[in-house]
Amino acid sequence: MILKKIVPTAAIVWVLSAADTTQTAAWKIIVESVRSRGPDQAAAIEALGSINTPASRQLTESILGGKDSFMIAHLVKGLSARQSASLLPQLAAAAREVNPSTSLQVLAAIARAQNIDAARALGTFVGSGEQPRSGVAFGLLESMGAGAEPVLIDALRNGATAWTRETAGATLRRLASTSAIPAFRSALGDPDENVRSIAAVALARFGIPDGLAQLKSAAAKDSSPYQTAAMVALAALGQSDAIEKLKTAATSADRAVRNSAVWEMAWSGSQSIKQLAYALGLDRDVVSRDMLAEKLLDSSDPRDASVLHDMLDRGGEMSQLIAAQRLLPSGSFAAKLAVSRALDSQDVAVRAFALKLASGDPALRSDLARYIGSSDPEVQLAALSAAADLHQGQIAEISPYLSSPDRRISLAAARALVAIDPVAAGPILEKGIEAKGNLRVHSAALLAAALTQ
Image 1 (cartoon, one colour):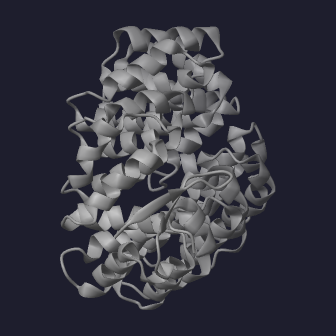
Image 2 (image 1 turned 30 degrees about the vertical axis):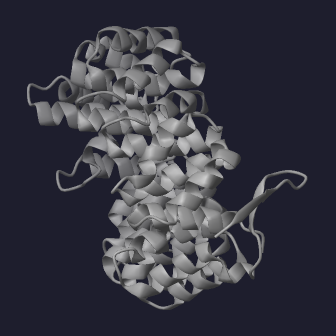
């Protein structure tokens, strides 16, 4: 196959010298591999997300409509946010037709679109009560943040089951949604006690005492899952008896009791509760301090900032990252350094947290792109993605990963090569389609993606 380079007004495009584009060798490799049921099938299906042509769109829609859980599971892994947004009706339909495990993967692809239509699509799953699908849908809505609030508010107001309304209320409370305040007030009259309780706790976060009776009822019941949260909410509203009970719980010798109380204090969002935490010396207890730092401390508050910087200077790896998460928005160099350093940690949980922070902070993406050689495949994958997004990296450094046995790494390497230097990538990909396995399929995918249609 002979490829030519031509230069249009805005980009370099690889085109086949003769032949109809849908019959090119590159596209044929993808189609044949998808249909083969052979060892390259999964790689080819996942690679469809890298090809944005009418032919690839048709094949993608055909797979989604085919109800084959294996093929759909691999397809959704490779879809970009833009592709997910354009396929929301098909994805929602597929999620109802495939096996439970694949259904969860499809829901994650829907959430990738990050728009109100995606939130509405997920909202159709929260009320079914089918676990774990309903719970996962709620979690994905929470990850979408403020954009999902209208859907969650509707679930709080109109959910068919108490569990749906309660979970929607709890999610909106964690999001500190001011737009949900009218719905929280209405939920104080819900027939279910737990729904009433979470609505009252949420209102207390905003200093609204409308749910005082519901809070007192929940705080008095050992059987209520919101007993501790209600006690903290009452204390935040200035109820003296609740403040004394909270003092006892937050300093209890029983670590489980203490942690439960401190965690609810952290979620309260209350300045008076924060001052109480300092008065009790909770900032001097490592576990309590970390919980408060994660949710309650504010880097713009001088006293809080002092605690956070002390965590960066003297805390363990996870403590440093918790502090870094709060300090990154202020542009703290020390926080950025802590995250970059943690990407090399020997602790898997620490690396995962650092990766989450680095991936979500534009200022850290350039640092992340330098970790292509990481021994952690998740860090390596994110590094290749960052390199592609930033057009940063060396062809010689990245090209060996085209042959990675990990399909995700191989495909990410191919994408990065094309993004960084399409001219240099062309001959590498042309040679790659003469190889076998991931290298052949992913080289074909990126060549097919660049062909004019």
